Length: 481
Image (cartoon, rainbow, N blue to C red):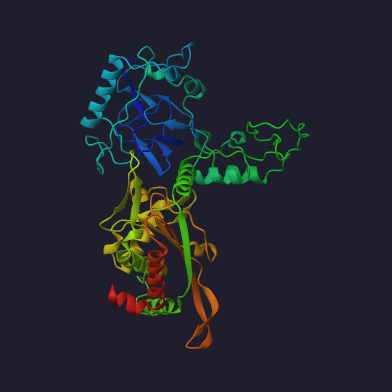
């Protein structure tokens, strides 16, 4: 590879993430870029982030198509140094794919990798997304750097040809046609193939109006379905007939990003945690009345109901700390219950990218008003795809308000590696006995799923009853907290 060519690899995104989906290129071949200028949007299992360039120069090659999943450490973009002559991408070698040969790195490649890491420490490489390099022209926020990812490559293969298939299919000077997650979700939900759409945006970018036009366009006459294939374990392609059901396959959606992370986490929870569930109906009339009175006195900063319940939960976890722990099994088979000096309260938030659980750090130190402000902030950043890995992965207990979806209860799956989750159903009018007489009250259902390895039913029931009593008598509960 020419010394005038700088290859930037997909950086270590932290928190154990090893891959990311390339959502959209923000630059094209031939563009001039500066240090710390955003060059691409990528989506990880945690959030959507912009990748800044650690180099200044001219974009020579883009190593990937939008919609493609890239591994950390693989080439992302090649940039010619400022003042360097244009360098054409090297032709792909006719030999076997160098990435899959298993050849060990030579001393020369190892030295090059060490030089790359040294440049990062000096401020010429930005390996933490969106925070700027220490020596960058624009400055910016900083946070501790994660460990670098070592990449093993054969010395005989030039860096710019590590992705020959990708390089050969790029259209020089043209942005990717794949657009924002919202528009991609719209296309997926309506069965519209983005490959068949001609984008009306700049450089052929597919806009929302393009997808809407494709949705409303009349369908072409369907061809006669092919004969049903023999039963096979191989997955049926989109448009073919499924061998087991005999039905046409309408869509095949790759599991990746947030959905992939959720699937892995829920599978691990179900396979490792022997969970049990307890529930109770609660009269929330007094809580609603108290909040209504507060809202009359202070209309603009009255906490939401979830914030009050969160306050009761943190107080309950102080009284029943076994539910604010983690169950760990060592490599030697030894087992421990890990307790925490504090509470990071997670809450489930539905976003366009899927269900995520941002957590309020040190929630036990906050008032209901402070909890309300943090719930609103974290909900906003989660829905914008800007929540950090720490905000999405540091909870010790989860509060799930599924009542907003109009349901009363749920057999929840615990958010691994936590050991318990409290669910809150919708609040509705129900007949209720008050002082021996039937009355209409505002009733909700609380459901607690817990890991039976860390406590018995008495502890779980005690915690659930504590929160229920606080909801039914909020004034007295808040006075004691």
